[in-house]
Length: 111
Image (tube, rainbow, N blue to C red; front, top):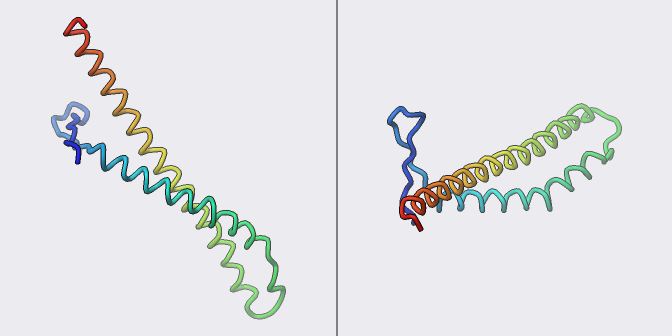
């Protein structure tokens, strides 16, 4: 487990503990979920949306909820994509901060 990095929160003196190993673990899990949704759920949702197996009768109205359910499933996929993007942005910010710190150390050491 890595040591937490402490970041100042907008100069307020409060700290935010960031654990790089937890962020990378979250990212890996999000990617696995996204891959599963992309390879299984999304293609099948599209196929289900194209089916018209129930054409008439009392249950016709009840079957219309499936379109909403399919949309919600696609919304779930979008939410996981957004969460993944936010985690990537955080990891990139951490990398940039580490590079800036490394450059400052190198400059101070005159290496």
